[in-house]
Image (tube, rainbow over all chains, first blue to last red; front, side, top):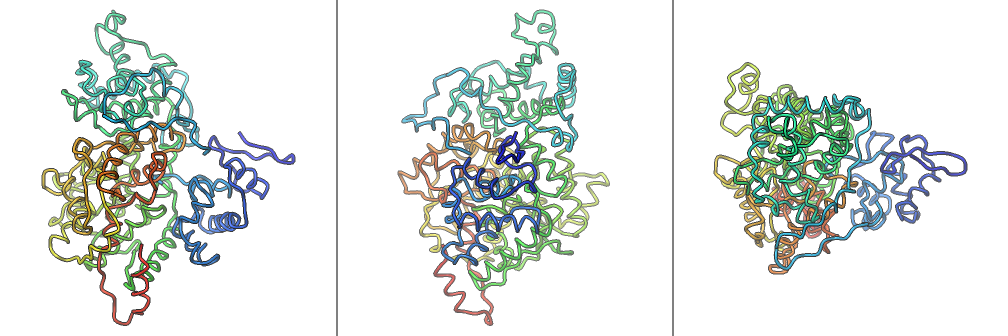
Amino acid sequence: MGFEINGKTYETDEEGYLVNLAEWDEEAAKYLAKEEKVEMTESHWEVVNFLREYYNDYQIAPAVRVLTKAIGKKLGPEKGNSKYLYELFPYGPAKQACKIAGLPKPTGCI
Amino acid sequence: MAAAKFEVPAFREYPVPPVVKEGTMAHVKSFPASAPIQEAIGFPGELVEDWHDKAIAKMGDLLGKYRSLKVFMDACVHCGACTDKCHYFIGTNDPKNMPVARQELMRKVYRRHFTFAGKYFPSLVGAADLTRELLDEWYTYYYQCSECRRCSVFCPYGIDTAEVTMAGREILDSVGYGQKYTNEIMGKLHRIGNNLGLPGPALEDTLLGLEEDILDDTGAPVKLPLDKQGAEVLLITPSADFFSEPHVESLIGYAKVFHAAGVNWTLSSTASEAGNFGMFIGSYANMRRAALRIRQAALELGVKRIVVGECGHAWRVAYSFWNTLTGVGAGGADPFSIELQKQLDPRYPAPQHICEFTYDLIQQGKLKFDKSANDHRVVTFHDSCNVARGSRMSDMPGGQFVIPREIIKAVANNFHDMAADTIGEATFCCGGGGGILTDDLMEVRVKGALPRMEAFNNVVQEHKVNFMALICAICKAQFTKVVPYYGFDMSMIGGVHQLVSTAIVLEVPEEADQEVAAGAEAAED
């Protein structure tokens, strides 16, 4: 499974998550966002970039609290809450934003 | 993750048994596990060539090992008492989701191979061979059961469908036909220590962040210690509590309770998961391996007590099976059990549920609450199936029903129970338990939530309930995702200790910035 953009192929798992983190680029993110019916704005990119940075440091997506706090610090306290994140990523910041950021799907009772 | 491609069932005016519609759920099959996922937890990577003989041999093995399974295979008289008790049948109308029919998928193979009549006159007794089609049906329908055991309550023979489902999954796994969701998580738990795959440094960072948040909100220096040697209490909680909303609100609640009571406690980075999906897949080996992490952490940290956070099936495993799995719990006289029993404080239950822990402190008058802080909430309580039907709390009969409700009433002024035949022992599953909480089973999850949503809707209409309190990470995740399908807001879902967290009064040290505390109090919620 996978998709192709401008001759570059990206492998995905059965749920559409990228298999190789390193294959991710902006084109892939735009494609994945489109599949999710999410229109990428600057606010979306802020979240996606933060997720990738955090993943680089900790090998896991940030907890929702960690994410809301980081976004709040960067974009102002009125945006530092999960309601704002759900507005950006209606299916849930953890799963949907991770998918667009090319990170593995968070698993467990979440 | 596109929008639902299925119809959300409508609320019924009266809860009459559903009309049967054959095959409505035959198309819903969760993703099977890949070879690496299977092999990591001790199962063949893909369907083995001689799967038929292996499956029958495994069934024979389980029948010999679990006398209960043999009784359940033999005892059913097809009376039908279970049929309309299952939330999945109620929500999907698919007759194979009747507990009796789900079991029959295995029972007819059992008859064929393990009874005299079935061996020689199969057509006379409804015996059948295990064909590839039937094996696929096992996979489909054993992963449309949440092992909630509501049907067992109403079965005149006490047949435990969950145990049949577990056996079905164990046989499937043993021939290389496992489920991605449960088995991937099982592997992560073995490899990293929790279902999320949250490594120690990320956990530490998350906990430090929470300490800052609580200080900002309340002015009290509440700590969430990690790997603290010599702590009195080891808290074992689902890893979703570290990661998700609303789960984390309960984690903050536990921390505040420990702080207010002055109890020296810790979390463990190696045993950072209460959940144990080994039970869901009927795999004793995996269940034991997961549980042993907790024993190891308890021994290494030298704790005197083990408390379990808000996680339904974890509490069943802890309460009902930890004594033999880990040596936690009194009674064992073997060296394995004695080693930990010597260390644990016999004055407290081992293990102890966080609700028992908090309730005990409330009884002793050690916690102070401002109940009015929860006045914006009208609360109901959903009994989680594994707590309700698979365990108890304290030595009080029905303690698992009484204690969480008493806590809620101690911290909130507005409480209303849902209808009596949908709570307590007869509680309806959230629809996501037992390995069903995966996106690829969303149709099953939404439809299976119907009876709970009907009962919830009734208290919303009648009493203006706006908060469903829970003590299970799966219930929390399932409901936040599923209630919007039924027209409710996900903010109506939360934990019992979230309510505790809102109302608990913490002493603020004098040197703390009073202005911060006052400002935060006004802003809370």
